[in-house]
Image 1 (cartoon, rainbow, N blue to C red):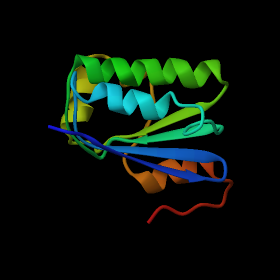
Image 2: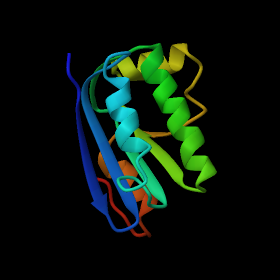
Image 3: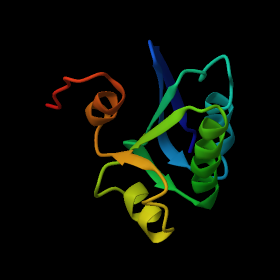
Image 4: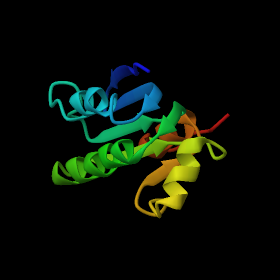
Length: 121
């Protein structure tokens, strides 16, 4: 399955939203967006995985590499993962829950990077 990757740039943070399967075939597309300094160079990267239906070990590798990449740039990575999703289960099984700053919704992610007060609806 082909993955679609949307990029939204706003003041202070970038939002990357892949949809479809994040696997060995689609991981290079996600990686090319996340690691492109002309696309994602702000202080915070929000990786919205809400529309990811499947993730394999290559997809997990992209997440770990993205975390490492943002840290080398002194940037913050926030991932959006629906609590009952396949992505949430795979992250838990892989023992990566505590590695990422993880929120349930995009609104929560945006609130975590915006200045207070912020109200999640």
